[in-house]
Image 1 (cartoon, rainbow over the protein chains, first blue to last red):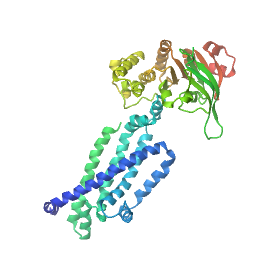
Image 2 (cartoon, one colour):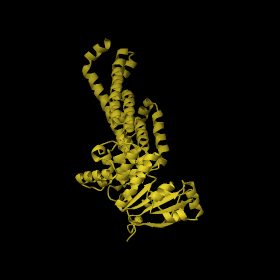
Image 3 (cartoon, one colour):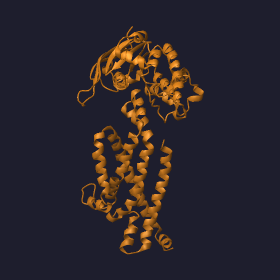
Image 4 (tube, one colour):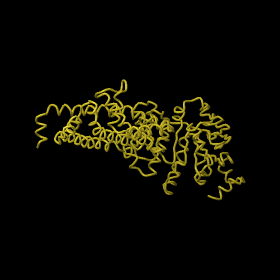
Length: 209
Length: 244
């Protein structure tokens, strides 16, 4: 009840934070796709790079998010206080599932299908765009879904470096020991994650072949 | 008449790994309308030879000529579009319809859609599949024999001069295999193409081959007509005939 009253009183602010949250997650996931999918494809062409690249992405994944946000602040260009730094950190987290699933999705294509394509005279680019990506799309998209759902949660911590988002309520609630405030941030973030998971899962099932 | 395919002194060594010769000093040629069957045990270099012809593998030395043209001077993907390729696993594109599978090389070559559609119908009829019934099907909705029919139609799509077939009927049940062998034999005469047909089944080889080559440890141990093959005193050939 307290929560509803709170939203009633702070509707504009709450929607503003929700919007910021969506921008953080949307922008970082989009960037991670733009970087991660080509990187994953590259790994299928340069198998020797797979270990180091996936290893590095794995290491990034283990850095506690609050610490990563902190590390980025003093960096030139990428760092500082605000949304840009937060997006950089969120991209770093989103990369691993996207790169890994792109690699797995494309390597999982039936070798006979690949051999037939090459044997019939497809160029590498044609093989990739006409065969490998369409057939791997379901798995690739599963990586995007995981990255998005994790991103919704991690983005709440972005408030710690002044990037806004629903985390603002959570941090404010924690520092004033106010359960209603914590819930005001955490509840919509959780619902957002569920919605993203459901919607993207729906698309994923349509893409899986 | 220029042979469709000439192979001279072809060798392939596995890059790196010691000095393993997978194919050594192969020489043969295939005339239009002729089917050269390559027989041999697993690992004798039959499949490797096919891949050296369409450059899925690069020869270590020697020369391959397609219709008089040295294949080494061509872009591999251009070369491959002039050679039909059929493999045991078939490798139909599961996300394409039967018609899209068959029409792939013409599409890569930029044929107009109506010409592709006409060609696809013609080829499906040729391999014994009713175009009205099968063109829009998914490969998943086909039996093994029907799939390999599509595989053969797909390899013929852009009217290649040469066809490479790697145990095309090897994974089919015995009844379907015999049926396809018989039809393929009739097709050979009508098509007049040069073919290299790999199999380890001697009966199949004798049925379909105008000439037979027996490969042993990367070399051609024997090369001759079916009749010569039957009568040969070559120990390798005899061993093979006895096993059949």
